[in-house]
Length: 210
Image (cartoon, rainbow, N blue to C red; front, top):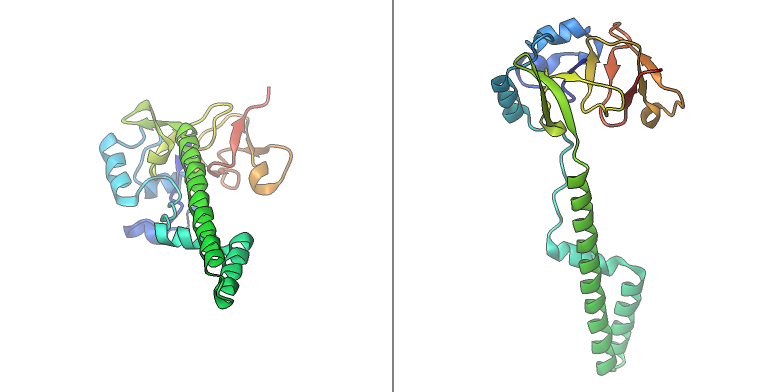
């Protein structure tokens, strides 16, 4: 069982808090949450509206005209444009027009293929959305991982992916696979002790030894 902590400064008194140096009890007190009951649904909704989802901000898409110009940065496009300019200089009008038309066709094809790849990636992201089990209003509830807020009490079982950075409140022989973060090949032991009660989002998966 863990209590999620902010990954960026929150408003008000939490802005200056050094979360990594605080005990789990101090974090719970700072966030005004009782680990036995968790946040209320109203508190979670207010925090979600105030601090935003538990997700990295997405990049703003490039405008279409800039994506079109980017297609002219490829080696083949540069050669075709250069050949077209040379054809204009030597008055080979039909050849120049043909070369420039080819660059436009190449750019349109490139944009179309890029659009297909982005659509496939977006579909894959939607299929890979994870959920998490949290304690709210004293009961267990399943919520999308991106709707976890600071102060949520997250419940983990063997094989679950850690949905947010947090502090361990209670655990029994817990081990975390942190290989994606540290490169260590063996899971790291975790517990409610002050220096071993930190877990990190996405890259870790909890396991219990048999």
